[in-house]
Image 1 (cartoon, rainbow, N blue to C red):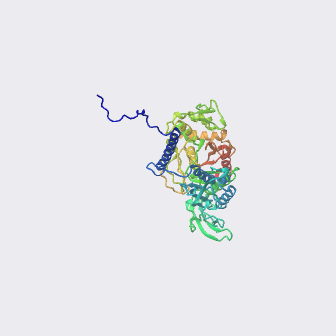
Image 2 (spheres, rainbow, N blue to C red):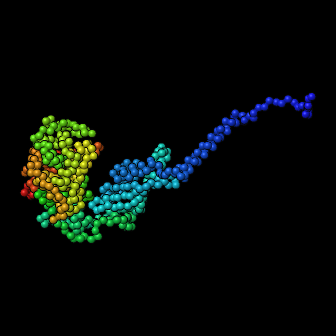
Image 3 (tube, rainbow, N blue to C red):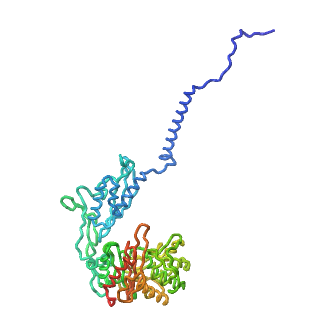
Length: 551
């Protein structure tokens, strides 16, 4: 029996799963999700980089900071057209910078940039400190700031210094300018070794020296802000020199004859290059003359730092002779070039096959000296310089001085360079005059400008045989070597030339040292190229002005 539960309905339709939106709608949805994801990531990035826990420092455009540094560097190095070209008004900027520094007799500005800051309008502000050395007086220090803006139009993307008078100094304006006032003084005074009066008026090179010695009447002056129209003084920005002259007259070891001769010799330098020299007594260390050209400003003769070049071969030769590495007649070949990490060569790439050490010294053969480097310990040159020549010990000459440095070489290349007075070796005419005196007499005597100085140096005399050899080598350098420029002068003069590299793109400094009788001398000419061609004529002029019995 069949049982029916109600009336049967229509047949059931087959089941199909629900369908999504059409394909076009699905593509739009994916694109929308991508946009939302990008926005979310951007927001997250802003959170992380600016306000989140991993926020990184943001700051002005590095290109703006670089432009500011470039402007200050050009200004400090007197590249005024280049400095002006970095501004919004090139010609005006160049003109004002030039008149500002020349009108106030500023010798070389030293400008130091501070921390740059980005302004709300997108400009970049850079504060800076200006240190302005005023010729013969001192340094005027102040702070200012410059603003940089991103250029538009053809210069788009380039940052320019927004030019304005207030950039040079905050108080410089269309209505006010600065004026340098010098007070009329007789200048510092001193007595020479014979009780004769010395003044900076008669011997300009002595101005910084006598001021340091405490001689009365140090130069005085002031920089004042004045009204451009009336000239009325609005304020005094800075003053230089003591309030009152002390009237004190310093007693020195200087010799007026030698000092005047030194002043004349430097003044005769034909190219007007920076130069300085020292003359001292070999038997006592008393300084007879200190001279610089230009005469005012930094006392390079006793405080300068220069590579001594081949004049340092006096110390190198001492080390080689004491160790018995060479004798004057030992054959030490002088090739044209020698490679020790880098290529070393001789002046004008000269070479002397089969040369003796005497020939190497008199012709200043770099490659021969460098070839002997393995015969000396790494610290040998520094040890000899300090123990026998007093270099690097503390000297008390009567005024501040730099007393030299002969550091141990870092590697073989530096050791090679040290053999010829390069690498990190530092000296000045004071030091090299003392080296010459020590080589000629066999004993270091601390140089000094004032009688009875404090002397804390401790040195050992050179062996007598070494002194004899050094004197013979220096004499031969004058009679037949690179110091022949002195050969026509009377007296048994000995000498040594030096050429010291400064950098790849700057001319060499020229050196010469010499001794005659009881006097030793040293001279350096910045950018002199060669010692014989630049320092040689200066020492020739000096020695020709002082007779042999003037020593």
